[in-house]
Length: 171
Image (cartoon, rainbow, N blue to C red; front, side, top):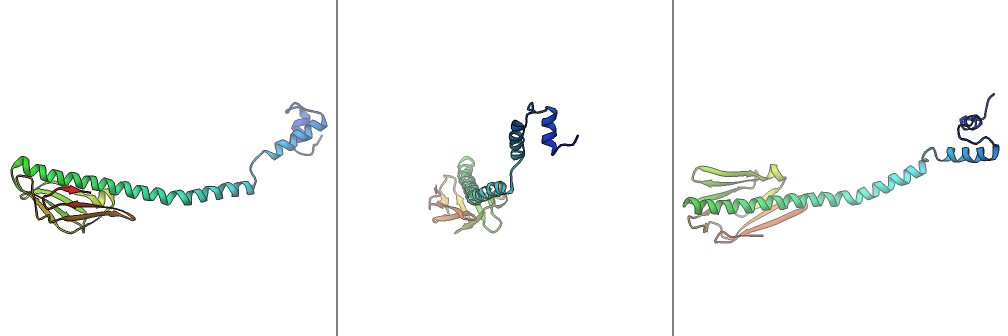
């Protein structure tokens, strides 16, 4: 015996529990209708996802840039503080050298390097500075600062660090 389609044959064998004609046709119609999504539904869902992604992804990239700049500024602030504290603790002059071309800031005591941070590699930021270095005396007062300005930027996010003539750091 041959039936019209697979749904009809299963109904006739009693797999769905209904063998009479009216219920079978209604049930088979529902089963056929709910087997998957049609192309229009998929297109609508994919277009909504694309629109939401187009709105959200640039903002997320901006947040990542701002976090990286904030992290780099925090490290630079810590390096200025370290240079000052090393000068006071060792009772010697210490210097903080800024290399904007390579994105490196180093704390030195004489010929020795106490700490060196490659901020361009670590955070992907670029540096712009009005001075190449600042020196702290044994008492922690900065020399050569003369209002040093250091700009840290990544894409559209940027932050500025000001160092006063006495070596105090402000953001």
